[in-house]
Length: 339
Image 1 (spheres, rainbow, N blue to C red):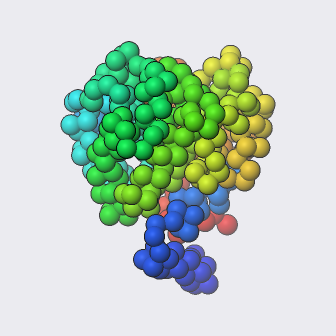
Image 2 (image 1 turned 135 degrees about the horizontal axis):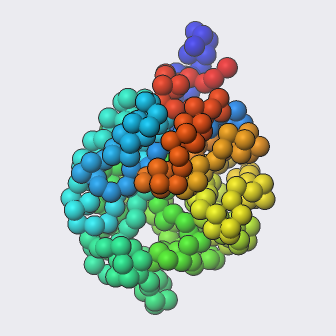
């Protein structure tokens, strides 16, 4: 980095921290190295990520599997705050891994398969837990400040905020994707379009963690699944551009058509210049797909599905392509932009 570029970069970061000290936490006033870097590679490169689902007791299990196949490490580490009792009990181990991955030079992405606050926590992957439903009356309680269900949701957010604060104190920027797949109705939080639906819960979650808990290290991802209703869903589930920094899509060929230009164009149009990404997938996008859809800034295959669906040769072909960046190709990315 040239002396002039380094001075300019440090000046911008210093200005952002001065604002943070003098003013209440304002997400829009902050600068994020993660976003800076994603914008700098936009149109030319895509970060190759890897998700690590259960167990939190072994929080980089799937990243190590990736390493066995490729001899390398993903450029983005992903994990989940989880919902089962044994997984919640290991959130600290996952947090420690996040900090280690960040210090090793990886970007960090986190999600949260949260339990239903109208039911018990911890929970299971069943109709009483993550896959449960809320009545309309319960939902109205959830989005009404001060009600028992609303207070329970805030208490659940308090629990994960402890770990997000540790990450903040360690200097970690987190690409956070809560209430993922808003248009997916198998989850208790999903399938509720309109201003009083899932989008409203996203706003409440954003404001509580940002303003009440002071978590200025979160980069907010708004996320939908690739259903045939995607174009309409992009309108009816939008919490508002001021609430999200990136727009991402989970690609499971949910409408049977795969990586189509129609889906890509709909995401690009809605993002309106903000970064976009493939935040979950089973079938890896080929280098040709990434070349024809160049604005995807990262792509993250889902843990075990990566290795069950894609051959080792295909994994290597995608991650070793010129378009995809993995960890060994990202030295010094914080404070650095590709020429």
